[in-house]
Length: 443
Image (cartoon, rainbow, N blue to C red):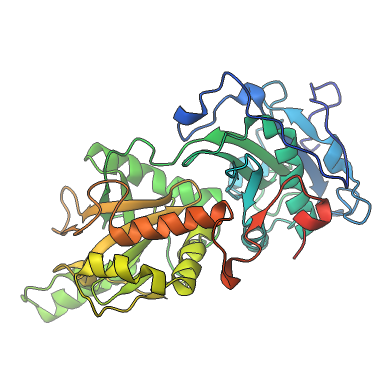
């Protein structure tokens, strides 16, 4: 016996069905205070979600969705969130063995009130890689993107009005939904798309973030799944996050912990009593649910490298790298203001970053990036109770919206998001969920 999608007796909201003609979005629903929504599941009574299933033998086929005909069971698989809970058995493979991946992307309105989806194709590539790593059958590009598009069309009344940070968050999920006791790939799989209108991830922050440098616990290690957006990567960060908040921090910045232990072991073997610490050689990783960037006095904007396979390749991270590459000249004035060096040249890189590089004022700004966070300044990075002492207070970023470089990149990102700024590198970033399926799903 396997778990199944909600039965035909479950309450469904009527689907708009397949179409190749443009349809308009509904206006934002009256009575919802979109301006003050927290980062959470909000107004689920207004949502519908999509739930498709398949088996190991069948996989995802054109019966689920065929772009050529714009038909499939996708259009008969829309359910009321509140009235049709997801049916899962106690022996569900994902509940027992954690075989779940998901993506997070956003839909928002531009200045004309038209809905826009930001870079959904990049989410597909990451979703596809994650499915392969977790022994899950990846959906086709067309099924993934049309699933997002159809879900947004069903929920257009809860896309917030145009405004800073407001969005309809979309979460595609893929999980093993078959019943089993043994450790092996599931016999059945569920592909889901659900949404929630939200505000920013760090909405309640009143200034730059106070970040804890986590030196005792590891988020990911080489050879693991640190670069896969799977549920386990967030589970392992949860207890350290709660402990950091008890000490007054907003979040953790994790280390490549083996590099810290190697430095400590080496110092012990050599009986090193110099002023440098083992932490100086430790390599930085990422936060609980966000990538990080540092702005150095030499004009380099740097983010930790993906080469170790321990960091999630964030979509906003990639967007920032592209923005700095394409608009470096326009960032020069902000960099001069940040560093005080009138001759500085703006560059961007992805490389290993050590804690020691941040000391002695070498880094003037720091910020984190993510779909939910966009760009948020970091004011301070420090260790906590019973840890090796370390503290960096960045020159800029104590007050929102951050230092001059952070503010300028955020402004550029938001201009790109609403179509007011373009470059060769940003072509194709914006998709209209009410365009034709062919247009929305194009390469």
